[in-house]
Structures are given as C-alpha cells and as structure tokens.
Length: 382
Image 1 (cartoon, helix red, strand yellow):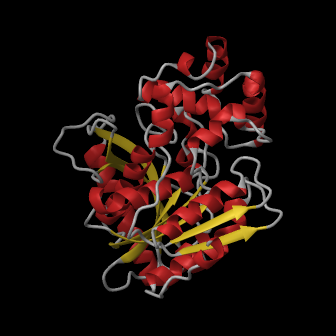
Image 2: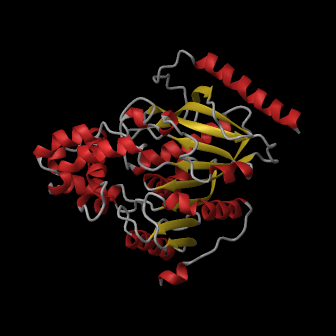
Image 3: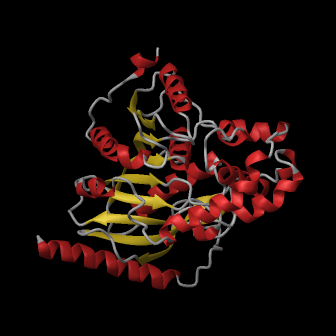
C-alpha cells in the first residue's frame, strides 16, 4: 500500500511539473480556443494534509459578458485509489475574504484550514476543489456576491478537477459553502443543469448563506461587519455592473469604501484594520436607486423546481445573516418540493457556523453520493 501511495503521489507531481512547463508562458490572457474548465497553470502546493496531494491551479471560467477569464483555486487529492467511475468531487466555496486580488484563500497562510470538513472529505476518497472565485488570486475584478459568476467559477473548478490528469475525478459532485460561499452554492444549483450539463450535482450544502443581498447591505442591525460588507459590495458592483456608488450611498462615503475595499478578511490583524477602516460608514444611509434595487434582486438566489436536495445550517445567534432569512429561504425551497435538511444551531454565531456544522454536512453529502433518499424537514416549515 505504501508503494501504491508513493506511486500515486509521484504520478501527480510529475503531471503537475509537465503542466507547469507547458503553461509557463501563460499570464492570465489566453487564446479563445480554451474552454471553461481548461487548466492554464498547475503547481504543487506544499503542506497538504497527510496522505493527500495539493495542486494550485489557474483555470478558465466565464465572465459576466461571456468572455473567458482566468480563475485560481486548489485541488486536494487523497492517496486512496479512485473507485470505478472516478472520484466524487466536493467543491468548497469559501466565505468572504475581501475583494482585492491578494485576498485569495489559496494565497493565504492557511489554505487548507479554511476548507471546513476537509479531513472527512479526503477520508471519504473525494477530490476536493476550492475555487478562489474570479478576481481573487487571478486577474480582473472580483464580482462579490454576483451569483452567476460565483456559480460559473464553482462549476468550472469541478470541470478543472475532472480534467487534471491523475486526479481521476468523475462527473458527480456536491457543493458546500459558508456565507458568501453559501450564496455561491445556491446559485450553483440554479446554473448547473444549463451551464455544465455534463456534470451531475447530487446535493447542495450551505452554512449561513447569503439569500437576501438587499437585507445584508441596507440595514446594519447588530452586524459588526456591516460596513465592510457594504464596502465590498458597492466597490465590486460599481466596477462589475458600472453601477454608480452615489446611487446607493452618499458621495462622501466613497473614500471610506475605496479604502476598505483594499482590506482582506483572513486574520485577526486584518479584521481589526477592516473594522477600523469601515467604521465611518456606520451612520451613512443606504438608499439604492432603481438600478441598484434591480441588481440586488437579481443577485438573490431563487428556489428552482426540481432542484437538487439542500442542506442548510444556521446559527440562532448570527448577527450577519439573521436566522429568519435562512428559514424563509428554506420555506421557498419547500414550496418547490425540494428536499431540505435544516440544521438549527442554538447559540452559534455566523463566524463558526460552517465549522460547527461541517460534520453534519459531510455526513449528509456522503449519503447523497451513496444514493440514499435525502431527509426532508419541510413539514416543519408549513
């Protein structure tokens, strides 16, 4: 067995070296012959969990206007042999880390620790892929909370894992995300059948997902991060959609937004600076005009009839995503006859929601890959 593991690892590292040498001239711009999911660059990433190999990739996805873009991410592959038909794929979708290119999780100090449930997924034999999303780690603007672009990045990351030689990934996949990643996961469910029909989405898991962007940015409530999330949204959408910042916040707020948009959210020191930079926004009014309201509505996930089963985890003491918003989205899913497993977590806040629900999410995902009928808590939402 040890010899087999060494052989698998050696094969992957050799393939990575070949890919790197073949793509060393790539700079983020590329010929239109590339298709979504094609790999532009790949390199081994040290520090992977024991018994696994990690590869940092740059792959092709699709922008808002349909043009190709380069997106970065990670693929982590366990050493156990792939089953017949290929490994199941788990796509992890990360929570908010910022909107600056340097805020990519794959570039951070602990890229593996941020993937909640990673040990369980690797032990189950899945290939795990973690996109940075567009504009984080790769070129271009980060379309923060722009659901369609998040979903395309997620789906194309799965395509990239399937294409990466030696990974032996099959077409079946599940998505699991937290906060912004939960928003991305729900949009992935909406787009998967049309955007990536060759893949098979077996289930969607989300912890404290953003289901109502307007509610997130219009009222600060008790959320200490409100000013930061407002800044990220206004800065990103002003670039991605050419939406005028002055049409949602006073012109005087623009310097604060520009400054805050440069801050990442991945460490205690970064959080301290972010909260300080965003503090002046606390008393600023948020009054979106008709264009902004249309964008806010378009980037809220919707419940689709016939969608895959959904796992929702929500803390009852969440100051960022109030529990009633997640329960309301569960009701909408139930009205479309989507099986919903709803995990209410008393005493849990927003920041620990994914960590506290990771075991339950991993068990639920394993059952979806095994073909077990999904549990359904919809009777509780009638």
